Structure formats: structure tokens, C-alpha cells
Length: 208
Ligand SMILES: [Zn+2]
Image 1 (cartoon, rainbow, N blue to C red):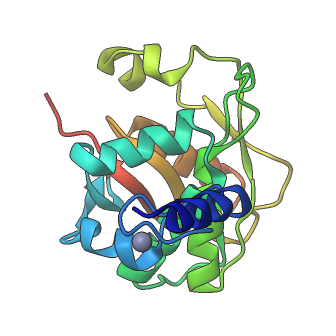
Image 2: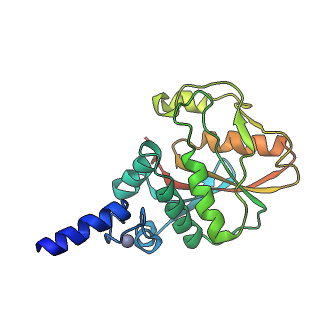
Image 3: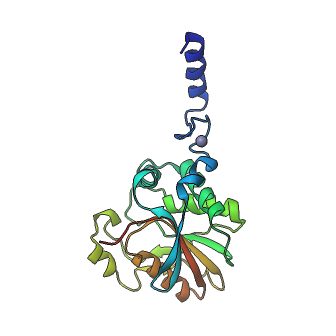
């Protein structure tokens, strides 16, 4: 690399500190077009009777992206990931996108699932809405084993006011392990007199 070229790249980096990790495009956390091939073929199935679609299995680069989204607090990346999901999966008959809420005691103060929901919202033209909350503070999910997750109380998640009343809801989460959280979220939507039509997650952790 010549000195002028290096100087140019350095200046570009200062102006656009983020760049696509796949093609190097400046000024973007990741291009949607670079993410799309990673999601092929996406997974579609069901979790406890709830239709559940996901960008892929929680491994390799999809897992790396999920970790960066969550622990890197990379909201622009989450929006790009959400847009990729929104392009791969056709919009269902739904009124709102509702992310699994952030745990109350979480210090992250940033909901990675809401970032995904906002990206999906841009593609589907359906609003993203925080409509649920945890009833009690819970141990951070990553510290829970599979059994503890399955044992989650039926009302672990509860509606936030009546925001979801009469709404057809697509639930959004970053990673699904046992699917219990999504089922509890779907239960809370029903109690809010709404209907959970499907769940969409970035990845699914394969069973043991
Ligand atoms: Zn790119």
C-alpha cells in the first residue's frame, strides 16, 4: 500500500469508523447483501406449536455475528441483520414486531432483539413495539442451563399495558435455545388479548 493510499484509508477510517466485515465497505456495520448469503438456507419449523423461523444454526459466522450484536452492543449491525432476515422471510399476516424484552437487572441497557426487530420492520413495513416485560428479575440467560430454561414459570413474561391487545404479533429474539422464552412470550401475547403468529430469531442452538 502506498503512503497516499494509506493516508486515504486512515482518513476514511476516521470519518467512517465502521466497515463491513465481509467486503470492507465503509460507513456500514455490515451490508445487507453480504449477510444474505450467510442465511441460506434459512430454517423454518415450529416450537411448541408456534411457527418459528430462523436465519440458521447458532454456529460459525452466524454465532459470531450474534455475539457481536449482543456483547459488542452493535445496534447498526443488528439492524442490518434484521433487514437480512426481513428479506429472506416473507412478511406474515401481522401488525407488530415485538422483541423478547431485556432482563430488568441487565446492565446492558440495550436490547439486541429490538435492533433486529427494527431491521425487520424496515423491510416488512410493520412497526416494532416493546410490548412485553419480565415479571421478576431473572438470572442472565447465558448463565441458565437447558433445564432451568424449560422450568421457566408460565407467567415469566407479562404484557406491558395493553399495547398488544387485538394485535397479530411476530416475536423477535436473537438466539433461541430451548424455545421456552418464545413460548412464554407467546403466552403473554395471548394474555394481552393479542395473537402470536410466529417467532423469528437470528439463530437456533441445536438440541443436545
Ligand atoms: Zn459488505
